[in-house]
Image: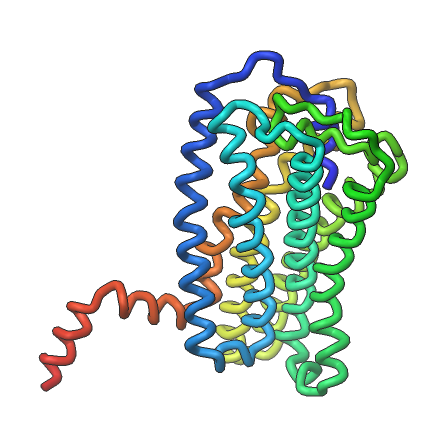
Length: 316
C-alpha cells in the first residue's frame, strides 16, 4: 500500500493535542466496532442458514479480515498517538506494522471490488451460482485471490525485500512508511496504481453500472417485486462500497495532484488525510447493519427484553 509521498513526511515537533484527539477518536470507534463485529459473528454461528446466500458469505469474509485489522493493526496507531512515538523502536516492529497495515488494507479494497462485481451476477444471473463448478470459479476463487495475492505481494515487498533496517523513523506513525521497496520506483508505482487506485476505480464503476442496470431493468420489465429486491441489494452494496470510496479517495486524489504538480500536501496528508483510511474498517461493522436486517431484528430483541415480555403477556 503506497500512500504516495507519505514516506517523505517528518514531524519534527510532536503535536500532543492533535495526537490526543486522534487517540480519543480511534479508541472510541474501535471498541464499539469490535463488540458489534463479535455480535455479528455470533449471529451467523446461531443462524447458519443465513450463510447460504452468496452475499452473506462474502460479507462474512470481509468482516473477518476487518476484525483482524481491528484487533491487530489498529492498536498500533492508537498506542503511537498515546505515546507520541513508536514503541518498541525496533525494525521488527515497524516491519510487522507496515506488513499488517498494507496487506490488510489492500485485502479490504480487493474484497470490496470483488464483491461489487459479483453483485451483478447475484442480482441478474443468480442461476450461475447453482452450478457447483461455476460457484467455485466465479465466487470463491476471486475472494481467495483477493486475500492471497496482497498477502504474498507484501511478504515479498515488506518482509523479504533487501533492507538494512535503518530506514525507519520512530517519531512518525507507521515508522514513517519508510519501506525499502519505495526506492524501486517501478515497484512503488505498481503498488500505488494496482493496489490503491485500481480497486477504488473498480468499486466506483461497478456500483455505477449496477445502479444503471437496476433502473433500466425496472423501466423495461415493470416487475415491482423483483425491482424492489434488486433495489435493496443495490443500496446495501452501495452503503458499504461508499465507505471505502470516501475513506480512500482523498489520499488517492492528493497523491495524483502531487504527482502531476509541484504542490506538496505532505503536512496535511500526515495530519489528516491518511488517517481517513481508518474509517474504512472502524465504521464497516456499523455499515454492515444495512445488508443484515435479520441481525438487526435479532439484536433488537435482546436489547429490549422488557418489550418482548410485555408483548407476550398482552397476547395472553
